[in-house]
Image 1 (cartoon, rainbow, N blue to C red):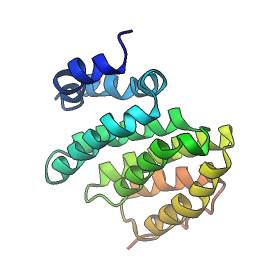
Image 2 (image 1 turned 135 degrees about the vertical axis):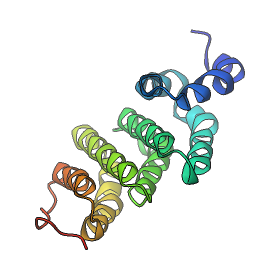
Image 3 (image 1 turned 60 degrees about the horizontal axis):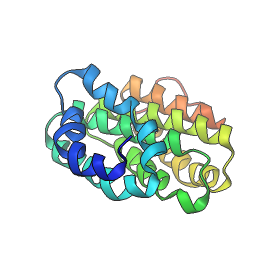
Image 4 (image 1 turned 90 degrees about the vertical axis):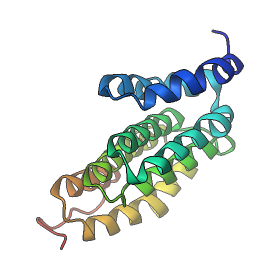
Length: 182
């Protein structure tokens, strides 16, 4: 346990971010599964300053390229948001930021990315409901729910629709009519 400074100076660029881009899915998945530990060990403020900008940069760079990288980043955002569920309002900047990135994912041009974002939102919603933090619950109700409902109305891909409905079901939201979308 050498701390966040060691991670930033020695491991962030050559290892962590490189592993997020690895062509092997299980390597990328290992990074995603490490997000909870990273949140707990390094702290939310450090992640907002050091990791989140890198993740957003990678996602933006992959916008016209590999959808697999965008999926990995969204999975990391979901894991981070779950790890932050129930944090106090002072510590919820990271949670808010990754939630906005997940919402960005539900309008991606690639259906698999949208589906992963929807499933990630479902995981976060379940964690937030369990934690019961009022500000996060309010954000889910006023921001996430309307975004999911809007996407559900216009989504033609059935797997995406199922993922959005899964998230809405986690909220106790309305059930979509079968086959919806245009």
